[in-house]
Amino acid sequence: MNRVVITGIGVVTPIGSTRDTFWSALVEARSGIGPITIIPTERLNTRIAAQVLDFKPTDHFDPKREGLLDRFAQFAVVAARSALRDSQLELTEEIALDAATIIGNSTGGMNTLDDSFLKLYSQNGTRAHPLSIPRLMSNAACSAISMDLGLKGPTYTIASACSSGTHAIGQAFQMVRTGQSPIALTGGTEACLTVGTFKGWEALRVLSSDTCRPFSRTRSGLVLGEGAAMFVLEERDHAIARGAPIYAEMLGFGMSADAGDITAIDPSGAARAMRAALKDGKVNPDDIDYVNAHGTGTALNDKGETVALRHAFGDTADHLAVSSSKGVLGHSLGAAGAVELAATALALHHQIIPPTANFQEADPDCDLDYVPNTARNAPIKNAMSSSFAFGGLNAVLVLGRV
Amino acid sequence: MAIIDDVRSIIAKSLNIPVEQLTPDKRLDELGAESLDVIEIVFALEEKYDIAIPLQGSDASRVSASGKSEDKSEGQDKSGSSELPFATVGDVAEMVEKLVAAKASK
Image (cartoon, one colour):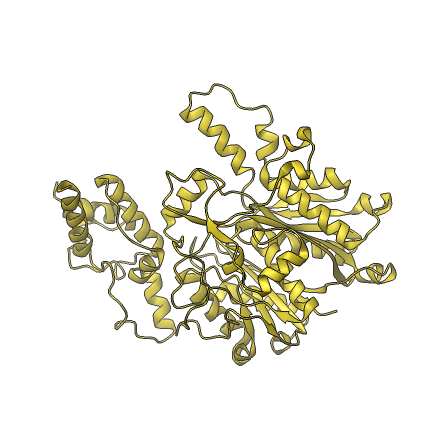
């Protein structure tokens, strides 16, 4: 089995679309959550979201190409280009022919779908735009990356709601580990902040009206977000031989299904995925220093995730630093696992633990060290990043310091 | 049809329980309502009466069986925590009656 490392990171997020702006906002707990401005709000009860406000498609695509791509695919391509550039990898034909492109997104081109249906159902439209289908298909993002960068190996999309990004990266990790692909371009993307999406989430009554406060007693729900994060995964010896930048080593990947409730977290299912990732990476619980939590800021998740961490880590849970990046990034659903893995990899790279933003006061139901509001310099040997999805699908990755 | 009868039939349908068993004193958590059931019941009542019921997901989980069983597993007593929006079938009907009356008086 090959050892696998991360040699490139690219992001498009509400707090910045370069690796450095993203990392500094995370460390300084500068939240990307703000008033909704990218869509009409008169029919919404929700007032806030974590939007990518500085994204101008024409900065990245010529008009013809822009018209082919929904916002979620545009985010994906821009983040993928950044990741490849960051890796300094020269993409030879030999590498490109076997390079994998495995991307997670929980929906597809929701902006395209919303616009098209609005015209048809509400404005008496009689025809849809001819590019509606290629723009909205769930695999539009992975196909757009493959075409843009010329990656010609195994390419497909993984959809598992809020675990999509983590499942996709885990799959890509396996492909490089087994030697099926010499490199993989992988990550998650999501851009589904539409009126229809908000109304659906409002009906679930889990959206916060003030901000996202993971693990805080005063938490009031989640805040929807959008964005993308992409990675270049590479066989370790290949990366070392070419003198590549190496952010972290991919050590373990664990998955599980709760086979229970469709929305509520099951602590035993989540803990099984954590244990599976530790076992896969041959990492003992007490060798994990930092956990980037799913931490959505809902009453049920944060309490259930705390119980899961105690199940999986036992007594060593009290020595863990646990933080959620969602106070800063919101919840970008299928992109969340990827954006949070970028946070986890950069934490290992910089040896700094990013804090849980917007934390106000401790909750007796959430009794771990959540690194409230202030980043911490601390030696991090290994770190974990967790995602738990609606439908009971759990995915956990373990990374190691290089 | 009185509001209490609507409430009983909506809850009966959602939880798949014979309507005769849904006396006003029955608690939703003891009837096995999960948090998503509570949200569905509230939605059905909002649609039926064109009212807005103030309920957060966190409240839904507190009045549901899932919230209750989790509390048990952690051995914590939540009885002293802040007031629930409703607990019983009768509470739900009373809440709807108030909201319908408030709407009529506008």
